[in-house]
Every structure is written in structure tokens, then in C-alpha cells.
Length: 297
Ligand SMILES: Nc1ncnc2c1ncn2[C@@H]1O[C@H](COP(=O)(O)OP(=O)(O)OP(=O)(O)O)[C@@H](O)[C@H]1O
Ligand SMILES: [Mg+2]
Image (cartoon, rainbow, N blue to C red; front, side):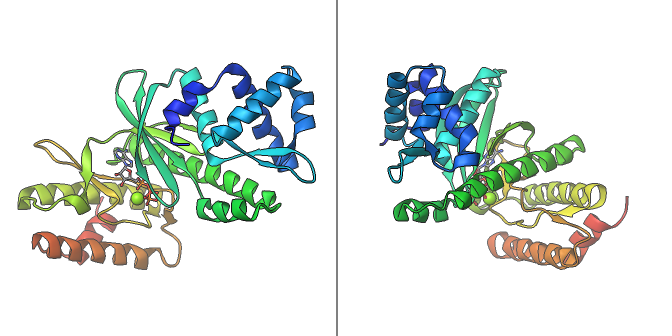
């Protein structure tokens, strides 16, 4: 079905939400939750439950197994809807917008906070590609599926914690707002990824590099981590006259004490430096970058 997440959300009535919640709760024990169990646990009558299940299937929020019994489990979209329900109920957001990015392991949507500020919601979807394969085979690999959901929740939580830690220390990262299930809400940076920028004055670039160093230094010296996936794709340059450089996408961060950390940091900085040179013909010394991150106060 071609409905957007927002459209799906607004098609849901209370019975549908209740049914979806029951499936979410019980799929840890059952994998595919038997229809009978859903009916038993539900406060709504059997007919209503059946109607809701039909609708949830239609909306792609659950999938079914028909043998050896009728059973249902959540899809990632089902999980998205439950997280959205949480954010709307808690009055954290007042609107959900378009999908702005669909990566291998995450979906990103625009949203509006109660303060009317723009935000984004990042839904982690680990193992999504494997899940498609599972669905095709229609096999009973629900244990695996449950573990993908649990992993996505863990990673969202990990990203939220590290963003909080970085942000409160003054690093240039989006302000984290909330974390629920496999998702996080954060401030929307009004800007573009560094890799999309064709031209940049030397002064602007210096400012951006400076911002990047400030953030990497806080990460390294105060928190004891490195980013682990630093690239022009994960640096957002804010629009406007005073461009700033924000580093996003932190869930894969690596402990600075890890035996490979220094080497990875060096590689990431070499990559950035060579990018700056190729793209903007501006030379930056990797050694100086490393010194500013690791040295001094
Ligand atoms: N706080 C934000 N403000 C504005 N745009 C953002 C923000 N966070 C993410 N984006 C946009 O979404 C894209 C993907 O975000 P992010 O890098 O966090 O996810 P990802 O896991 O790398 O996704 P992918 O699977 O595509 O690599 C970013 O490149 C950026 O365009
Ligand atoms: Mg990224």
C-alpha cells in the first residue's frame, strides 16, 4: 500500500492500537502470537479484534502465519506506529512529516515538536534486509526477528545516550529530545551534508573544520570515544551566513581505549583531509588535526 507513515497513523482507531500493543507485548514469548491468545488478552470483543487484525495486516503493520495456527507479529512499520503513538500521547510531537531519508538501517522523518520547532525522528531498522528474506521464506525464524527488533532498540538507546552526553558538553551535535523503542527524536539541523557542498570559502571551511575538531575533542578527551564512521556524509553544514559543522550518526562509536581506536581515528581524518583537498583544494594537516583532538586542554 502506498500510504505514508502519517496516513497509516491517522487510520488507526483505539481498538487497532490496543491490538497492536498486545501483539508487541506477546511476540517476545510467542513469536507469532496466536489469534486465540490475542482474543483472550483483549478487552475488546472477538469481532472487533478480527477487524483490527485485518486492518493492521492491510496497513502492513503486522504479518501473519496461517500454519500451524493463525498468528501475528509486528513489522518495523508496526513498531514505528507504536513509537509515534508514544510521542503524540506524551505531547512531545504535534506532527509527523515526510520521510527524508531511507538508509540501509534507518528511516528518517520530519516532525514538529510541541514547541513548534522542527525535529527529525530516526527509526533504527537493523537487519531489515534479512527480514525481507525471512518474510519471503515465511519460515519460523521469529527468534531472529525478535532479536533484530531488540537490537534496533538497543542501538537507538545507545545513540540517544551518546548524543546526550556529547550535547550537554557543548559538542556540535543535534540536540537529543527523546528516545522510545527503536527510535530517537532530535533537533533538525537546517543544513546539508558536507558531501553535497560544491563550493566553500577557505574561511568557512576553516570554521567547519574547527567545529569538527571541537566535537571530536570532546568525544575523545572528555567522553573517551571516537566516532567510528566519520565522513562527509555524517557532517552537516548549517545554512546561513555563519555555517557550522555538526557531526551526526553516532551509534557505532568506538571506545578510545580500544586497541584499534587511534588507527581508525587517523584513517578517518586522513580521509577527511584528502576529501577537503580533492573537493576544495584546501590542504589540512592530519597531524595537526590529531594534535588538536588529542592534545592540549
Ligand atoms: N539532526 C538532523 N538534522 C537534519 N538532517 C538529519 C539529521 N539527522 C539525520 N539527518 C539526515 O538523514 C541522513 C541519515 O542520517 P544518519 O546519518 O543519522 O543515518 P544513517 O544510519 O547513516 O542512514 P544511512 O543508512 O543512510 O547511512 C543524514 O545524512 C541527513 O541527511
Ligand atoms: Mg549516516
